[in-house]
Image (cartoon, rainbow, N blue to C red; front, side):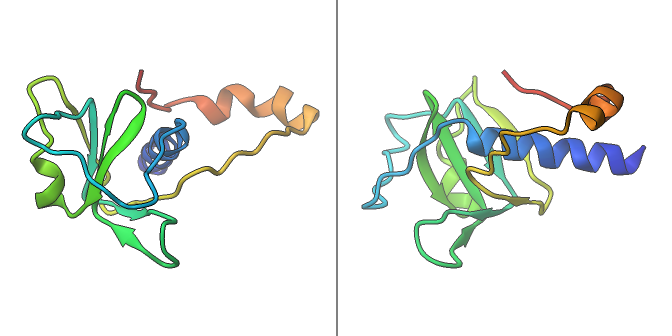
Length: 122
């Protein structure tokens, strides 16, 4: 049961990172005074893919786009009363891993088993 829960968190974080978010190339960050995030993921090992081997602890998303990346303290400023906060618990988050194929036999036999226990965020 513990393994399924861990995989669920990893899948959730992967799904969120793939959710068509964008980071501007100049790394400019939104002002936390004016902008409160819809979603914050913190306490993670988050690959930004901006620079080779660059990892941050947290990121903030508003309207489906990244508004800030950085350490937990920097991103905490974007927390508002309606912000959903996810604790990554040290897990690695990577962007853009899309697998667009399936093996029909395996999908038919295991599809329900593979999704059991998954947590989805809308």
